[in-house]
Length: 271
Ligand code: KIV
Image (cartoon, rainbow, N blue to C red):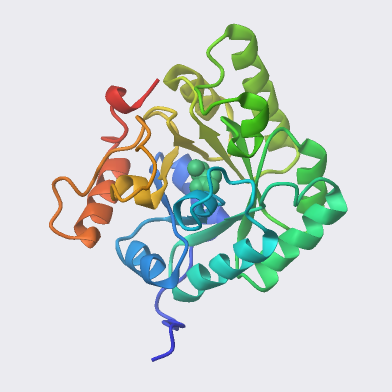
């Protein structure tokens, strides 16, 4: 049987649907996915967005960081994921150094969309110039602020960002700048819950948190962390959803429900 699922009764979510969800106060659920089988399972559970994250470098390829991930790796996994999804919105990460110039960013984003089937690309950092260049070419972009895993060699460790007032102000200013440059979504990683709440309230675009408290417009987790099958230590901001689940499907469904009902994350998984 072909892995392509062609069901004309299910309409894939669009960037407008996600914006409407924020407007009506409906939380947006998102999980990372890297292959067709998990993509289909996550989609079936009703999760709103699938992020083909460059975290695949760590959880699939076994690297210590996300830096070795290539554009070709991302295209391959994005294609696997987008073939099997029916409703969920598909976002793909632009990997390390693939968006160093606007031209490189556009060329690589085009590959993720044309070959991979992504509906949006995500890039890390306050790169308003790159984002507006991509948006001008008709490429939807998701920004990513807070902890930036691709900058691990500058950061030294995976630690909470924006704890000091000056650092928090910088993240708020960057978030506004990304929105102004045309970003359609923003991922906030590992920042204090109060800061994430402030940004989520101030921005018109949906803000998706990971380690950023319950008041973001949506939540994302690395799939292998929430299934407790990571090869590295599970970060504090995740939850083992397999603990009370009989099957993987049940665990994903429980995560989806917890996000929709603002029951995840709790203060125990927040900073
Ligand atoms: O690569 C990834 O999985 C991500 C999430 C951690 C947001 O960027």
